[in-house]
Amino acid sequence: MQKLNSWSPLHFLAALGAGGMSVSFFMFLIFWTPYPGRSIPVFEDLMAYASTGGAIAQFVVYGSMLAIGGLVVKHFQLMWWNWRQYSMAKADGRIDKMLGTNAHTQLLAIPLATAMSVNALFIAGALYVPGLWDVVEYLLPLALMAFLIIGVWALKLYFGFVAEVFHKKAFDKELNNSLAQMLPAFAFGMIAVGYAVMCRMNYFRDLLAPQTNPVNQSPVAFALVCPGVALTVMGQFFINKALVTSGLLVKFGVVYFGLTAIVVTVQLATLWLMFSLIRRQLSGPVQAAPSAQAKAA
Image 1 (cartoon, helix red, strand yellow):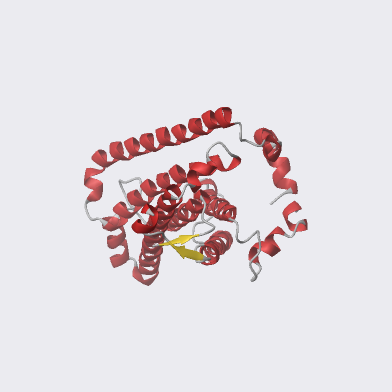
Image 2 (image 1 turned 90 degrees about the vertical axis):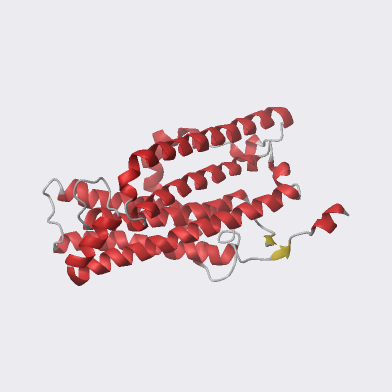
């Protein structure tokens, strides 16, 4: 395993993005396939629909399952890679140097991505393990327990950050002196003028530029995958629940597919962005991890 020189805990957001994208493809199965008597489609429902629904049904089922499976595998590959990088950063003291500084809160990306792992396992189990829904009443308490443990872990990390700030007094207030705490009140205003301000600053030009630059090399850029996933999921719910269920839109009509095409465009653009950032950042300059003898020396 080689050490990425520029690794930071924010690279866990890459794994978070892959898991989130798997959820976005799961929306097609939720809204486009029948699963009577269940809250989500499972393996048996999908196989029955694929065998009786014709070529389109097979494309929706097998295409979605293939995309979800690939993204879930990518999620866990990135989780494993990041945990290995974290272990090396912990061993050489880089994590300890973060404690009490402005970068300390980056550690919260780790439980965030781990919570996505629970979601990914749940979805993968439902889609690929026959008969799993028959024991779901045993699995849900385990999932809730896992989320509880992750929540306690996240609180511990955050309270550790607060304690370190007061102890070391290394937190630079000037770097965080903003209106961030007023975000709920200014949300609509910020959205209205924003991600325009970003254009004037040429942020997206730098993000998508073929040449490397501080914008597309920053792990913070992985956070842009999250709103793409959110827009995709919310778009599917808006179309299929708010419009179709209320009778304002005919399902599988021309307008329906037109609106869905917009959602799919956002989904594919987000998927492209995620893999582009992974290729740029996770294959950057590396160095071999120190051997045991080197450490002892």
